[in-house]
Length: 631
Image (cartoon, rainbow, N blue to C red; front, side):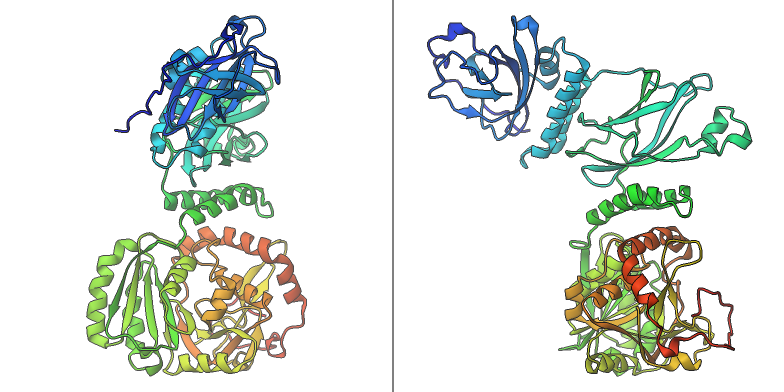
């Protein structure tokens, strides 16, 4: 248990001659944390006035403070609440509180707890002063010394908040009660950011305000920032006719940003106010601190936004996912790296293969790689993005190396990172001059494909990235370069593939050419280029649009993306990435990609297409295709 800082005294009254002039002084003190001292007291002097006593020899103690009327201390008396940080001990000092002087005298002060400080230091003050006091105290969370447990400081602030905050009536959820306020969940994004879901309604008057109060006392007004949507289940509970249940937008989500950290799981309060002045409050459930669950919830809430409207994704989804992404950065996520077999001495190329749930693809690839000297001599790295399968992968890897003899490494992550950061983590251990990003469900058609790609990259000026022809198992084209398509009536650009669904022998798909982008399912670039553009962006969720974003950044540097049909592989597409999850993330990724690259994409797509990329008059199509698939 940490000891309280010592109470230092001088052995003599620090107040010099002339003390009968009644200078202001601190009356109560509370140690909130290591070196964090809260003080309450009064001062009788006007701002800037001579305090009437000699302060020579007394140090100044820097404080943040609020001042307020406190008539019971004497005519014209001003009360204050102050917080000082970096205080080693309670020693005599002069305080500057709002331009007024007050004396900290260790012999004439009562050291107490946060609750008592609130009761005695803020006696008889109004609600507005109490709110200011809450805010002053709560912001000390951003100043906590590293040696003091944040939870202890937060606990002291929670007790102070509960002692001073004006309480509104608790909101009763009942059919015959006009006001309804309920919080489904509060999700932690990081120490200062939260994602709140719930509903509210008022049958008696317009709702004019909604505020959130953190356990430590930070108050945030949410009115005007909420994303509202219908909650038919709520309206059904209140007896609203079925035909009207979808009209009332009682549901809401909101991204909440605090000016200081909040670490306590319990104690969030939300307060509703209506135009008639009625105020009710409700307690929120314990904070959810599970980044994977929170990400799924945030993405699922996009279903509440109508096509063409981006207020929810722009104001709440995007900042929430951005905070989660920063919290889940790949650095520090590598749990282990294991080498199977003798690695090549100086590999030209590192092949990075992320594994998500489907580790059976490792054997399928190794059974093809074993007959290809190019891959056997490469730095082959499998990155496990499903940590729960680490033991299963370890057992399978040892057996597969014995069976096929292909040397490879496994990188096991300690948490799920998604496609972009799994690749970023893999590249961080790569040894090759060149990098090949390869999906686990991509299988070679024949040996030699890797050297075909590397030779082309090395001998082609301004080639920034190279992608091969990818075909489905039935021989139809999956990838022959990528372009961008804006569906009719949509403001968003979508990624599309040239000649998708046409036969692999289609003549136009046999021509090497510059394209707007190539797929990350099989993408070759130099390590130097990777470092220049900063790798794959972790802003996207799971595995969509990271590749085209990378290609667009390469293009910004003046380099080209090339489609190379001489290298041909099979792509099972989506087998390494479940369709249900892809549907969940697609809308957000499409919005983010468009918001970042709208102007550049419009410029690219306004340019005349390559001659080989014109629409065929009588295409052969062994599988169904859509307008989006072919251009």
